Structure formats: C-alpha cells, structure tokens
Image (cartoon, rainbow, N blue to C red; front, side, top):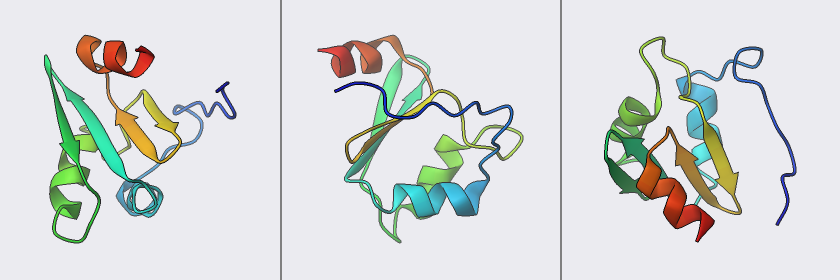
Length: 86
C-alpha cells in the first residue's frame, strides 16, 4: 500500500476535537511513548486518555501521525515503526 496523502502538521494544525473525530473511525490507536507503545481502542471511555497521550504540549496532534487502513500510529518509537514495517 502506497502513501495516499501527506499533510504537513506545521501548516495543518489538528486540535483535540478534530483529532477525536478522526480517531473514532479507527480500529486502534498506537501511541509511541518513549521506548514503549500504548495501544488504545477508540471509544467514549478511552477518549480522555487517548487525547492526553496523542496531543503535544501545544494541544496539537503529535507528529508524526500515520493512518494505515483503520489503524493510527501517533508519535515516534523505534519498536512501533519496526512492527509497522514488518
């Protein structure tokens, strides 16, 4: 599967409400946190925690953020990307 769309986060800022709308359509959200990856299933009960981990200090969606099918990868973590690349 090739890259379908590239969005520059510096020019297209995504805040919490818009990010949550995007995440709701996903099956899972993988967030790179330091050397570990946290995996979430989007739903009302997990919304606050997902947004806390996936937004940066400025309140914008962290970069890089990838969408592969219905799975999101937020932030960077070597192990997460190794798993993604297979």
